[in-house]
Image (cartoon, rainbow, N blue to C red; front, side):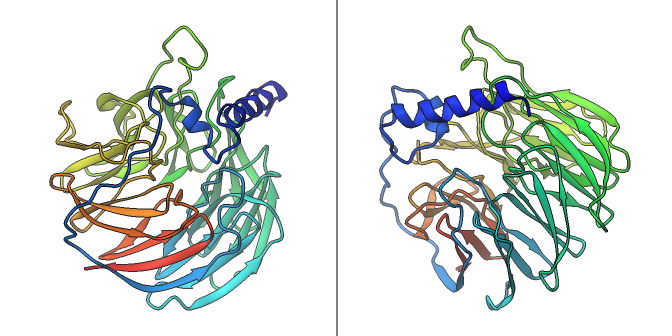
Length: 391
């Protein structure tokens, strides 16, 4: 990553901290509408569902002091999670039993990815760790071009890593040797964060900071297609800032759901790269789907449901504005989002009304939520990993 880009990002982070009087709000809040002053207060509602806590375990220092979005991963009845201070944990989902714990003694900034017997995480110092999913032992570590802020992905043969400098690297899954690299473009100004690469079959899909989605051949990294999701507009640099930081989500009918900041919410055909549908919307986090709808959280934290092909929302919930919501998760009949105060909110997928709420972590929620049937897994910023059954 070149020094001017690093400097611009550091200046933005410092400016945000100074303008906000040293409080804990992150850079995203600095970029929001300055006319909006405070997050919405929580409203009362009649609870229709209840949360039964199954178990909880601690994972190191959680997200740490930096604005990380370390995410748990679910594979074969096991939940894997990592903390900023280098702890990686494997937990059996049915009872919360810890299967193994590995302390890497490094600063983790991206992860975790879990598939094909590997657990993957990346560091601020551009090192990728591959752990054995059964034992937690380090199989290999490999250095890439720059800091890793998202979860690496693998199909068991190749590990794909997206770095903050825009490069996408393919590593041999058996030993970490570099097989190929693709040099993506990073604009002079972008949000701190990267979307995680997504492997489907023999193709890698990646969201780029400049506002496009690309497809690469998994075996050699050659470009298959490049679809522009949005173009910068406006007179000033902040007005022209566009980015895709939310993870790509595979929706129904062979499509990718792609929200972008100061751009569009787009639905892209996986095979051809053509945009099937888009609507003007701005979001920092990935999308969700279920009940025939697609869901996004806008940059001012409205929760919006769309039907693909229709520009008018099915419903909009505006009672969580500026609460810094997580990526929406559709499961069972519910849509779940977490917020900066550590609450999980359950909305009805049918009409967006509140049906349930629980406080999980006083330090807030930033990571994506995961679900399996009626069981919800929540990773709090302080490092508490919790399982709930929603009844």
